[in-house]
Image (tube, rainbow, N blue to C red; front, side):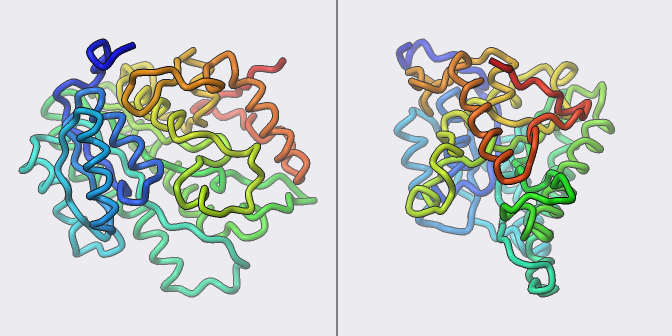
Length: 313
């Protein structure tokens, strides 16, 4: 597929993507949306990172507005971020809340200020940005809200409990993402029938961000490329809101469920080894690694908004 043959799935739509300055999931989603024709407002704390994201968007043939913001401050830039995006590009139709702060350590070692900062960025910022975006979405009769979440939100199986960090050190980060998941489904319910989809998306295990690529103790078998996250995100912000909403989706499972081809961030070439036919084996391998850590059947939660669709070989 050449650049001229791209689907342009979000042609002319305005998107706001937070956490787009770290060369990770937010950057990848912003570039992919721009390559598919969206006008993208990108936000993050690092001006250098935002400038790099802007250059990647330009290389993909897209256009963007750069809006630096520290989302931890409720009275700071986050209070005007949606309005700033609207003034730069028009009413926000696609909101991607990707900015997050994480960390794992024993429960009693967290300070009040550290926990509050996680909740400000991971829960209250997506809440505020959705609240700011909804009036225009409702007025236009269409909108897509996507919250990036984490496997750390899931309840560890036990006792005996798993030995990994989400189980043994995830009290702050995990609980904030669990709150975000509940908020996602609640808002989807309230937006039912209004042409607005509200979903959450998590890597199947871990996405290969620039930071993790620079050095991580995570097993290589647990990584997926940024392209799969961007493809899954694109699927969720282009789906029929009456058909695909209130989903706490795992990236690879979603791509298999939708039988969706995975393309590079410019939306051109297929990504070798990460197509729907390849993914069941990857999912099984990652599930086996988690199972070995004491987390049996980790992707079969039995939730109506996150069905067990792991293909078994």
